[in-house]
Amino acid sequence: ILASVIHACQDHSQRVRYYATESLFNVVKVIPTLAVQHFLILFEILRSLYADVDLDVRSGAELLDKKLKEVLVGAINAGSFSVDVLVPLFAKFVGSGTKHKQTKKLTLTWLQELVEKLIGSPLLEFLHLLLGGVFAMVADPNATIRNLSLTFLQSVLPKLLCKKGNEDFTEMPENAQTKVDFDKILQSLVTTMEHPDPFVRKVAMYWMSRIVQAHMGAAGEVGGGKSSGGLTKHGLLEKEVVMEDLEDGKEGDGRSYSSSSLQHLTAASISVRNSLPHVLPGILLSIGDTFHTRTS
Image (tube, rainbow, N blue to C red):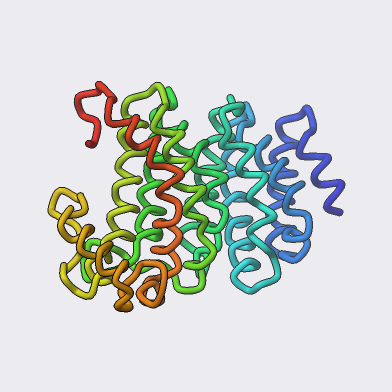
């Protein structure tokens, strides 16, 4: 049945495509397990219907899209489907090679749905594979694409920040914390800071500053509580605090960064600290950006 309906969705007749879309909606609604099993095929058909020349077909595709999102999110949260199956698909459509506006829009709405409704934020584990393409969409000629990409970035960033005595930082899901590859995320941001569009560079630098500030803000705590957060109001590490901590570490009094003090840090904080040597050259190069509204 599913094969026949999918074939009809590609018919030359507008009426056939419309009723096939309605039939596909009913199949997804009545037999959700079938939709989950053949999701990759259904998404390809959905992409085609979503960009159909006929308004009625596109309206039907929007209803199908909503139902398919509902079914798949439920399956992932129930453990019967893995989000890593979706990542290569979405990474392909957020890449610079995607020219179709409707495909970009559809992909961004799916990413937003997954970020908002998946329990434990499992998408964060694969975020570095998507960031480059999403940041590129911030400079898209289409206003809808730009707004959707910014909305996604605004939704994801708080999930990467840990709460360290600052209400501005949002707690990262405990079960996702150890899976986030901050090294690759920060490297992706450094690459994005070379984007030709100045606003994209600015947003990438803002991301960089927030992540580093959030996870390096415990420097004072690591150094034995000499500083409440280890960061000044300008977001820079105080030289005196850093030097004192380094000297204390040399004396071997138990406050070295590489030994017992690190056990008080989250896995995310350690990951960010370890990745800084890899991304610091790119950060330093970005200081020379001449765009007047660039975050310093």
